[in-house]
Length: 448
Image (tube, rainbow, N blue to C red; front, side, top):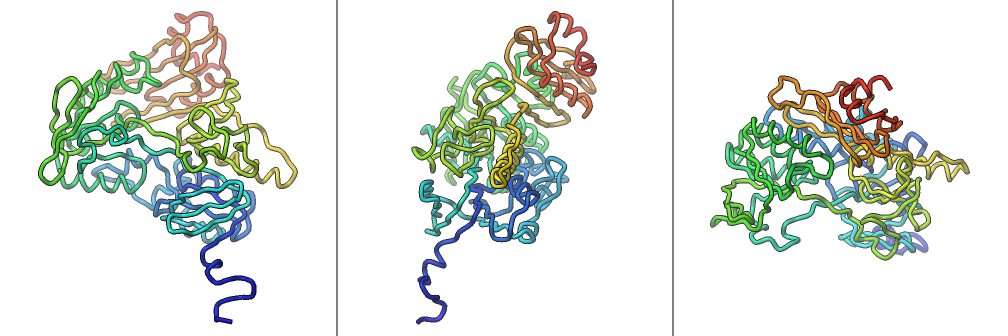
């Protein structure tokens, strides 16, 4: 018998197939928080693997559009590995080793066979599991997807992974003090416009909507941020879209062509026009809903022993009694922990409480910092000082539906004040009139 071969096990099989009790597919925020919860609940060495196409251990993704791109005092790995973003310990690659958790990095899974409990990588490796947690998150929507002319020019960037941020950093250095065009007026658009301005670029934002962050902001809230940005020197062009790009002889982007006929000079373009959940591997194998993989309150999918968490899970949002998909880091963290608790409880014949999530969004740019909790439906009232020229603007908004406060937003709040608006959104207190709440402003939340 050839050396290295054991009875009944051909050599190539032992090399090509790896087997684990638990596999987390995806190496983002959710994967890191799930790993921490597994360690907390108790996992044997060799039982758990994380398979990620990224080359680094799970990290706090929000840093990429903020401190990672700062010209001074920039965040760098290992500084922002999970779970520092929520005040937890930093899980360095060594931590996974100590816990006997296998980090399988730079590995893209190209085929998932859920009935056979098998995953296959681009390199042809096979991974078997007993329990799978799908944590593949979202991918960015690219202008090349729509056949936008010249959208494959060099120096047109998208931001999702650390690799994307590194490429953008190189361009920021190469095109020092140049012109940047930001396509999109959502999270990435606003955060990148700020960070490019901090890097001393001439910045123009372009978006089709009548105001920025339209999925969350009211026109009143948006007006504050647009004027604040304008005062910082950011130019904003609304109501039109990028329809093409021209490049120079090196293939580097030089101009952004807009639908309204204008052309903007550009050394760097950053595109932030949304994302889509990475569910392709599982099409036709698992029940889907609202663009994501449908789960219950424990993040179990329609397939036994398969869980889905984070951006791609469409789950029952108990507070509003409806199925929702939430694309945010807070939910990525909490859904991952919930799934692991549920897995471990079911193994022990115990039960855990249903996921009871309060939607939460936040952003930081320049000297600004806002938080939002709850649901942005119904009538709105604006309160506080929303003058963009104020030294320290502090203002907010309540959303009122059927006589109850269902959502709350606050810019410039303290930790205590942010907790107060979260409490209001969770408890949904009744209000006498919109005028009364407007008059009370923040104190309405602080007294609850």
